[in-house]
Amino acid sequence: MRSFIGLLFSLFYFMSLSQAQIAKKEIWYVGTFSEAGSKGLYVLEFDRLLKQFSEIQTVHDRKSPSFITLHPSNQFLYAAYREGMEENDPNGTIISYRIDSSTGMLQKINEVSSAGASPCHVSVDPSGEVVFVSNYQGGNLASYKIREDGGLHPASSVFQHEGSNEIPERQSSAHMHSVVPSLDGRFVYASDLGADKIITYRLEPNTGTLVPVKRGFVRSAPGAGPRHFTLHPDIPYAYSVEELSNTVAIYEVNTRNGRLKPKGRVNMLSTNVQSERNSAADIHISVDGKWLYASNRGQDNLARFQINPEKGTLTALGHVPSEGAHPRNFHMDALGEFVYVANMESNNIVVFAFDSINGSLTPTDMRVEIPRAVCIEQLFINSR
Image 1: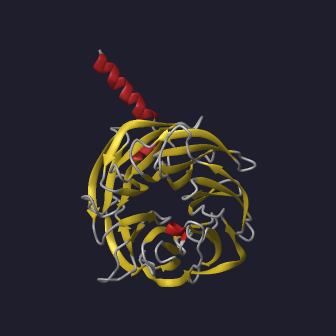
Image 2: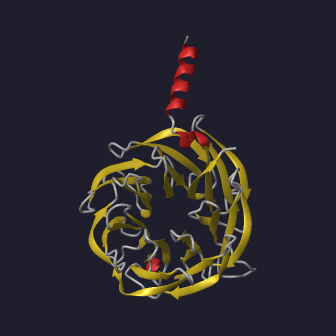
Image 3: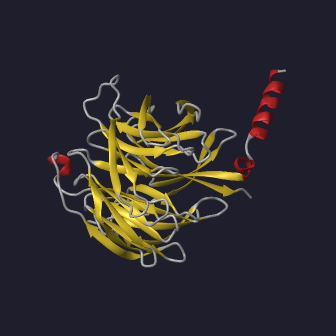
């Protein structure tokens, strides 16, 4: 009897899934630091019905593919490797991959220099014409025109930043940490942790070059350290996670000229968790635009906030333990069911159930052991 009831429950659950979920295969791409047994870039398949993961490919073209991103067409993936193209090359390498449309597996197209040391972030403009790279140690950013085959041309533009601030061990020079394009692709926002600035550039998509916007930068609070940046999908507001001060800064976005206007900052640390050293890492907004999350390494949790749909302000809702150590990156499920958290120092990815009604996150039993996991991308492809 119990087995019959279980069968009925499984059948009901299967029928309740959307056709999109049933008809598509879900692939995860996981970037890592190449140490502690890591195989490099991991390709996993996730079965939602069975709640199981399977490793289908690993790629180790160079050391430490520490950040990855998908092309808007879902046909290509770009990986920022810390290792250079030549021996003793101080710069990193950006490698483009073609994605097999039936399996999700990767095939290398070409590689180019990152034009700076320690690339830590890579992104693509919404039209799929240009790739942007942030070089942390190099203190610069670069843009690359995308070829017809998905590969990259050499850098179209490189901008060297200058500046320092009040935390000498982290801010003695410029440290570019992310470049995020605007939703319409006309501008990009470059977060410089060392200089405590977010700089707006205008994109020339035909050439792949960037042009600084006149008076187009904002200063963070001294010692804040802007790291990652996210734009709200529906209202003209953006949010910056500040690594050194463990805060989230709120900005109003002028959609005409791309400029940012500071609108406040909120603390993201918990008063209930003691940690001698804390370091904010990643920031994302839920697919419904109602909730914002930011990860903290040290306290090892995700701070939860509710977004005011008119004013863009944030209301703190507490914290969720990351179920591991050093949550460097996390990913919001495109279907709105889960949040995937990569805990680098505990070598695991933990899946949290997402409640869209109240924004709560609940840890599940679904976990993947991957050494030094630091970045997650999700892709759905048609099953055959």
